[in-house]
Amino acid sequence: MYDVLICLPVHIQVALAPSGTQACTLDIAKFHRTCPVLPDHKPWLVVQGQDNEFFIDHTHPFGAACASSNAGMIGNAIVDIWIAEGVRPVLKYEDDLAAFRIPTLLGRHTEGQHTYAYDRADMLDVISSLKVPWHPDKGMKAFASSLVFLGLLWNLEHRQVSLPENKRLKFLSRVNSFTEQFTRGRCTLRDVEKIHGSLCYISFVYADGRSHLPSLSNFATKFKGNEYISLYPPPSLITDLKWWSMRLSEAGVFRQLSPRGPALDMGIFVDASTSWGIGIIIDGQWIGFQLVPDWKIPGRDITWLETLAVEILSGIIASLGINNRALLFHSDNQGTIGAMDKGRSPNFHINLSVRRTFATLSSILVVPTFVYVPSADNLADPISRGETGPPSLRLQTSFRLPDELQEFFVNAS
Image (cartoon, rainbow, N blue to C red; front, top):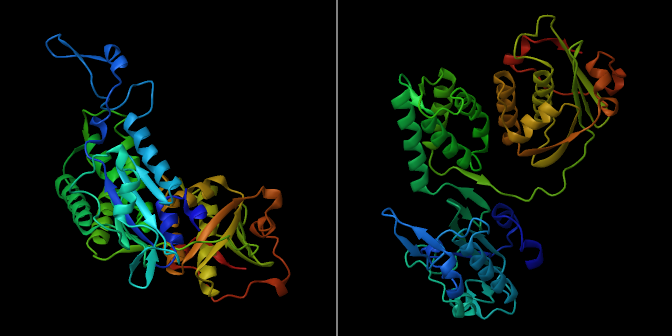
C-alpha cells in the first residue's frame, strides 16, 4: 500500500486511505530566509541598498534566478529522507509538509484499535541532524484522522474534503462584500481577479460551482489587461455571486472523495446534427430527439446542441436508475468534451446546459469520463440525422424532457 500511495496527490491519498490512516502536518519557520550561502559564494551574491550601498547576501531568501528554490530543495531532502526511512507517504507544498501513517501489525505505537510504526517524535528524530526550524504555532502536535493542508480540511476517516470554518466565513464575507460594493458601482480588474481566484480555489470542494465562474472570467476579459479602468459588473455576474453566497452560507458542506476505479463502458454514444436533432445510444439501444425548425439563434450552435445531448443523456441515465458509477461517454465534439471536463464554458447557453448536467449527475453520483470518437465511429451519428434504428431496440425510459428544453424539440421519436 505504501508504494501505491507514495506519489499520489492529497485528494487521491484521502480517497484511497485505508481504515485507521492518520496524518500530521508541519510548517517550516521563515522558509525562504533560512538557507545559508556557502562562504566561497558570498562575494558573488551582492545586493544594492537604497543609498547605493552594497551588501553581501548571507542567505538565499528566494533562490537565484537561474536555479529552483533553494528552500524547496532542502524541503525535498526532508521528504526523501523520511521516505527512505519508512515515514511515508509524505506530501510537500512550499513550507507545508504532511506525513501520513498507516496501521501495521508490527507497530510500536498503539492508538485505539490500531498500531503504527512511528509517531511524531520518531518522525522528527529521523531528520534531527538537519536542524529544521519548525514553526512553533503552525502544524499539528500529533497524528490525527483529519488535517488542514493546502487550506482545505481533509477527513481521512470519512474520506471527505471541506472548507475550514474560518475559511468558509472568510470567502462568504468576500463574496458578500463584492456584491454589496459593486452591484451598482464600478470595480477594477484587481477586484475581479481577487474574487475569481478565491472561487476557483474553493470550487474543488464546491464542484457544482464551476459553472458559476464563467461570468467572472468573461467579465475580466473586458478590461483587456488594463488595471487602471473601472467597469460595471453585468447582472449575470451578480446573480452568480448570489448563488455562491447562498452555498457558502451553508455550514457543513463537504465533497465526498471516493476512488472511481475504471470507468464502466456501457456503450454510451451521443451525437447531434443541425439537420435533424440529437441521437443517443446506450448498450445498443437508441433514442432520438427531433429539433424544431427555429431552434438556432446566436450563441446556440452545434457545440451547444452537442452539449444539450449530454444533458439529455444525464437525465436518461438517472431515469434508468444508474447511480454511483464512473461511466464512459463517447462524443465527437471536442468543444463539448472540453466544457464538460472543465465544468464550465464561456458561452452562456452552453454553460447553462453544463450546469444542469452536473446538477443531475452529482445527484446520482455518476462521474463521466469523456472519450473522443470520430464522427464515422460515433454509433449515435445516424440517429442524430433522423435515421432511427429498429423499433425493437428503441430505449424504453421514463425520461421526459425538462420544461426548459421542451421548446427546442418536436418530440422524442
